[in-house]
Length: 372
Image (cartoon, rainbow, N blue to C red; front, top):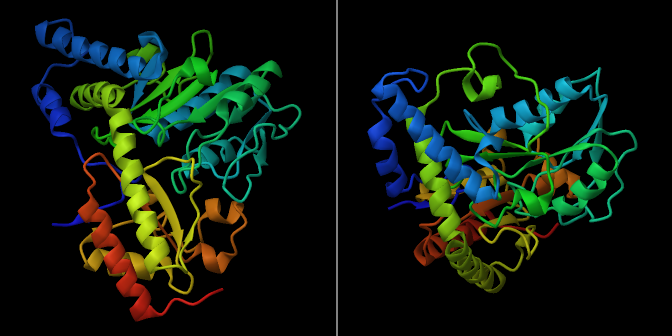
């Protein structure tokens, strides 16, 4: 049996979510007025309530998308176009879908990157660029698990008249997320990061905030995201959100125990390893530097041994360049290329942890890690 430890890329589908999706795999169009269409619409409305409840939002503030990449694009491009944004700011460690969406606004919109410290975090009093009317800071980093002080940044940004977006994809289902406490205008999340299906995402849009659609067509999702809804995926998203609302705290306790076991063995058996994830970050995420061993070589060796990990963001896999997140944290390029990410999910076990560490230890012996 393989040990799957790449949950920040995607999580296994919860059997309860699969069961919630099955009735809607062959259903009517939610825009149709007949019985099948009304049933599909009711399923979407129920899912909207479930996702809203996870965030402490109102159902009308939730727009369904095809995933977080689309949600980020709709938030940033839509807000910029609807509100005449001329300058935006984001952290230097944002997901590529945020960075590329903001870069697509150039040259009409200027972009400032906010520097992070060696733990991959913005300071709570990090200076914000003057004149930025759109600010995007992720809630939790996908590579290191570092949690950002979004509430403080949002408060200062909104006081200066800026709209605030947060990519909460890695946070939802792994920590408590309240849009009221964060004080953000826009928030993106994704089903498949919380044991839901791929192909379903959502964007929270605070009441009164204006965004423009990215495409034209029907009046789906209040005209902001036209296209026939994927009812089964949305129903699965709703189920996953409802389960996450109940089970996030027990999952966090599980992950904290697995993390402690992992780190204890790592310190004892592989003292050369360097832990890059901050201790108060997401409990399911560990970014490790193994000096002297290329990350892709370690990933390949673990894969052959039946263990799935990552070298960073799945969306950037295959890239020749080291992780922009690790470089922004001040790691030398050589060391940034010698990192792997281990991330737990709700079904992860001590056996998975032990199998992973046994193989890492074997690789270190075979490949000969050195100090740098």
